[in-house]
Figure 1 (cartoon, rainbow, N blue to C red):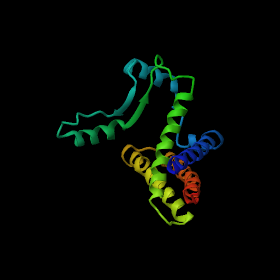
Figure 2 (figure 1 turned 90 degrees about the vertical axis):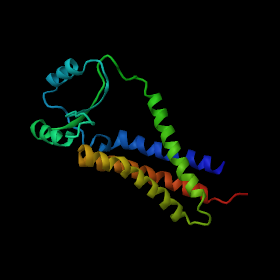
Figure 3 (figure 1 turned 60 degrees about the horizontal axis):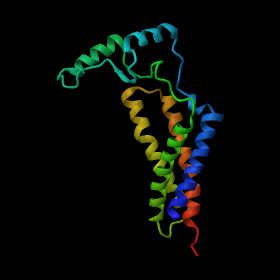
Figure 4 (figure 1 turned 90 degrees about the horizontal axis):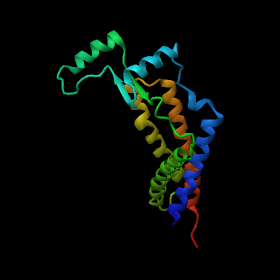
Length: 187
């Protein structure tokens, strides 16, 4: 029960911080840019991609082609490369954000639950050690995908650093309450 309560408190701290980060700081928008001359680009996407939502990578190469790397290098030099996350107009996102917020909270609860479980194994550890363990878990999680997306797909560095900052501060917040709760003496 102690682990579950610590996880709930940690998730609440993470959720509170990420709410502030996305609503009251510029962190959520760093690295994003408007598409210059957006109307013709949108028109081209609608006519080319149509109604099929997805994550598109270009230039697309057959992964079974033994010369794919060489062909890709030539195409990238000639036309560039990138990722496009596309949701067509006929598939609209729900105006009700509650399902997305619930999913985000569930994700943060699972993260906090893992951290609380690891901290529960640290018998006799100081507050700073318990807190540091949670922070390091968060640093590792923030590096895991964000650095790879920057390295392999060319995500903007400022976006990458902002996303990592949100995750690391989230771990700092969760770590404080998890370390405090798990360090309390039981009756």
